Image (cartoon, rainbow, N blue to C red; front, side):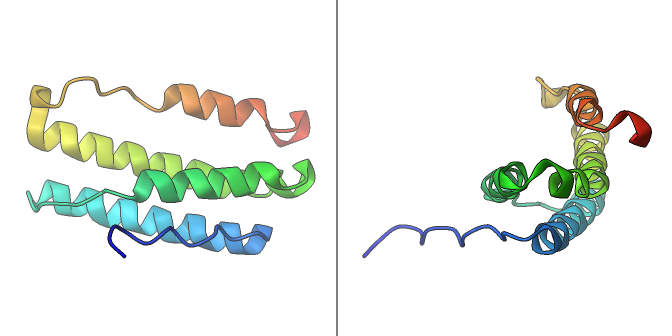
Amino acid sequence: MTGTPPPAPPPASPEEIAAALSELRTVLERSAGLVRQRDLVDLAGLETEARQLLDAAVALPPAHARLLLPFLEEVLAALEGVQAALTETHGETLGGAEPASRRMRAVAAYRKPEEA
């Protein structure tokens, strides 16, 4: 059989999702540092992993999903850090870069009024 193996199933409990989001944040933070050092960074596969985590979070009951908001915000901040590192290092050669502010507004929209 050839090709890449299918990705592992996403974690199902809020605790597992939170731990996986923390790991993703760490990978993104390390990647930003490596980009600033002008090292090559392979980010392939992170989109699939992130999508699986987000799908798993959305599948949770709303009360449980809301507990993940701080972890999601940390991942978004780390992602913006990678974007900033890429922009600092490679300047305008990247093109099409867009801040994650729209996503942050979307995350904020799901907060309960008393959490804002």
